[in-house]
Image (cartoon, helix red, strand yellow):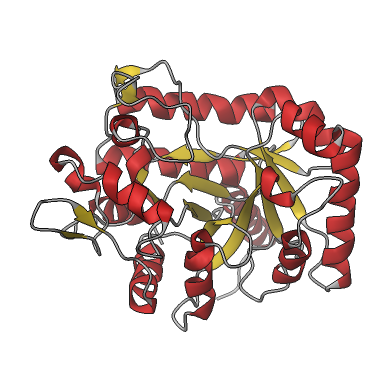
Length: 361
C-alpha cells in the first residue's frame, strides 16, 4: 500500500513528537549503607541494638532473626543474601546500587565486596558514595582515592550516556574542607589528581556529584564538581509529620538544587524516622543523648506513597533540563533511620512491588 507524501510527513512528525514526549526513562538507584555484613563488628552490634525493641522489629531485614529474649540478630554477610538482594532490587525496577565506600578492610565495605563477587549482578550496576573524611587530608591523602579511581574501570560501574563513570562525594562542610584541605583550592587539587588517576586507569573522566545543600553550590564549582545531589533530605524539627510532608520537602530540594545552575541528581526519600537510634544511640553519633528528640520524625509512608514519590523523582530525572540523567532513592537499607526498600521480616516486599508498578518496565 502506497502512502501519500503528506501522510508520510505526518507520520514522521507524529513519531518525532512521540519520541519527545517519551524520552528514555532515567535509571533509579538505591543508596546502600552496609552495616550488618560482619556480625560482631561495632556497626552490626549497634544496629542490632537499635532495632531490638519490639516496636522496631517490623524494620528488620528479611534475613534477620530474633533471639529468645527478642533481641535482633542480623547477618547479611553471605553471598546468598547479597544475590537475593540483587534479584529483589532488579525485580523492583532499580538500575543500580550506590554503595557507601570505606577504606580497604573495613567491615562497612563488605557489602560492596559481596556485590562485586556476585555472579547474579547482571542487569544491576553500581557506583560509589565516599565521605570526604575518608579522602584523608592535603597532608596525607588516603590510599582509597587511587583505589576508587581504579574501581571506576569496572564493567558494571554506573556511567552516563557519554561513558563517564559516576562518583559521589558527600558528608562535607566548609569547615571540614578548611581543616583537612586548607580550603577549596586544596580540595580542588585533590579532585584534579583523582580525575587524572581515573583517566590513567582508562576509566574515563569521573562525573563528580557533590552531596551538599544548595548553599554550598559555590564550593562545588570551586572544586570542579559536575553536579549536586543529596544523601538524605529531612527537617530535623519535624514532629510526627505525615510522609507527604517529607516527600514534598525532598521535591522542593530538587528545584532548589537546580536553581544553582548545576546539574542535579534528585534523591527520593523512602522515609525518615531515627527514633531507634535516638532511644539507643550508636557510637558514631556521639552528640546524641538517649531519648533526646524522640518526638522528631516523619510517619511512615505507605508502599504506594513511597513508590509514587520515587516515580516523580524518575520523571524529574528524565525530563528536567537540570537533570544529570539518573536518580537516587534513600535508601535500600537505612532501616534504623527510617529509609528502606529491602524486604523486612518475615518477608514484606510491598515497597518493592509498589515500586515496580510505579516505575513500570
